[in-house]
Amino acid sequence: AEEVLLGDPSLTAGVPGKGPITMSEIETWLDDERNFIELNPRLPLGLSQGSSQITGLDENPLTRAKIELGRQLYFDTRLSVDSTVSCASCHDPSMGYTAQTKTRIGIKGKAGGRNSPVSFNRILSDKQFWDGRADSLEAQAIGPIENPIEMGFTHEGVVKRLSSIPVYAKQFEKIFGSVTIDAVGKAIAAFERVIVTAPSPYDYNEQWRTFKNLEPEDLEDDDDLAKLYAEAAAGVKAHPMSESAKRGREIFFTEKGNCSACHVGANLADEKYHNIGVGMDKKDPDIGRHAVSNDDVDMGAFKTPTIRNVALTSPYMHDGSVATLEEVVEWYDKGGHPHKHLSTKIRPLNLNDTEEADLVEFMKACTSSTPVVETGRLPADA
Image (tube, rainbow, N blue to C red; front, top):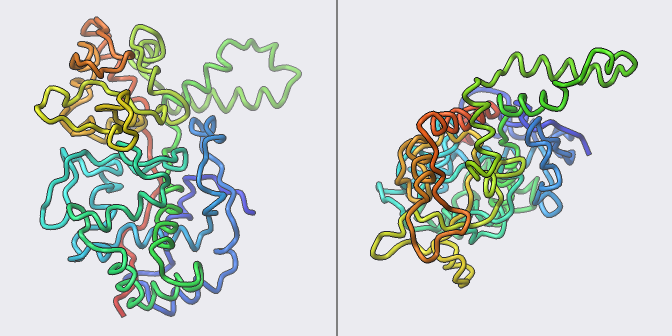
């Protein structure tokens, strides 16, 4: 296997060339044995503490060929029945891998009932969707294809369509043996697993906290430690956190804010489901995870979203009902909407205006870039 650092732009640069991908170009690509070497992914600073959470690679190993096929499928509207909607329509790189609409919008302008969750850092997540109904990223990837509100197609229909496109047929044959809906899911999942957030000011600050109290004499006889110290110092200098964000960090990770009761770990999300009261004042509220588990504790509970890049992914909550981070903090500060199924982790915080502003600044300090992705190069029709 070849070790790669996720975020490497070569993984998402697409088949070399310009315009629609031709058969000649794809044959040259598929003839390169390097594109079929199994990749051993390494996570960037910050996310790296979650390396033990990496999921799905035993069943679906990464290769450049598989990632590239997934990239093409992710941006191709031909996966929808009327060729108007792609995965990127609801999970757009230019919009923080969301759609920045209250709820998802599918074919013919149909609106769904839930906000589009982000599709980055999925390599650290197993169950997918707000209610966790998909057991894997592969299962999630093919779900919207046959959803009448999203892509409105059938699995059989999309397999037939992809089989009729020579450049796709050639890739599926070489990578998976044939075009199947399972192969479609595996390819898209492979692409999504290499979309990760780069280190943020928060991550550089955390790295520096490990070294900031060292004295010069601590470094004198340890060249390796001195090197790590220098790297941490350079990182925090180039990517500083504001004093407000630092104060917000203390609120976030202590009982004062209690945010890390759910927003914890490398991706600042616990991969669990909680009822925080959103939408529970409606006549027929969305029952969330309960529809999957049939467990009363999951009534109105939804999966914890990541705080990473949250400043780029408004509106918020599972129903897109909260427009700004300031309003998110206000929601938690008041203790959500009281309800018999409200999580015991939700309680009034009694923050003052400065503390609320500091908490917002901390969340903004968790913002960073994602890999540059080729979005336009797709297979020619014939």
